[in-house]
Image 1 (cartoon, one colour):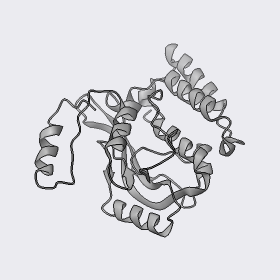
Image 2 (cartoon, rainbow, N blue to C red):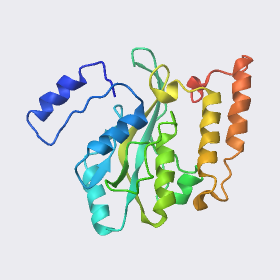
Image 3 (tube, one colour):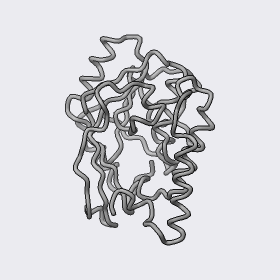
Length: 240
């Protein structure tokens, strides 16, 4: 997605020794565009995603393959993950951090994701390469695009969701000057929830949710408090 560092050289060194590895360059267009490009380029039966600051545990692919073998009708899913919330400076140095924790309860269901009771990340999502043509990574979402993608899949393939309760991904959720989370204002979080609701409000699994309109109202109020100087910016919402 338009990397300006030495990503190309590093990956090409790997691919020179392993033909399974392929580097595809495109100008910067955002995470949804990059993930869609990767999906379009994929040749295998299953697609997974890994963001640059996250890590798969060594058994991730093995567990995904095992789950899909046991559930051949499964079309999409995700794994539990460790979430590490950190505050960084301009040099990516950690200033403060929360102890990493397992994000989901073992019995997490697709319904929990619709209800926002289970927060997800793009790393750890997996799906069959061939899905219904209306399912795409939506470039209209600058944040929450991973949530939207799962809801799109859930709308079409409600009964084919696979959840791996074992945490198989290490997710570094960065705040500060780096990353999408770190640059998102309270108003932009409110906008994301509003957009998500308007897109999926007719989805059967969203019926009975409690986050709308509460989340929009909460973040709109916090934006006003921030502008009045009463609270810190959203960059520091986990760090008093």
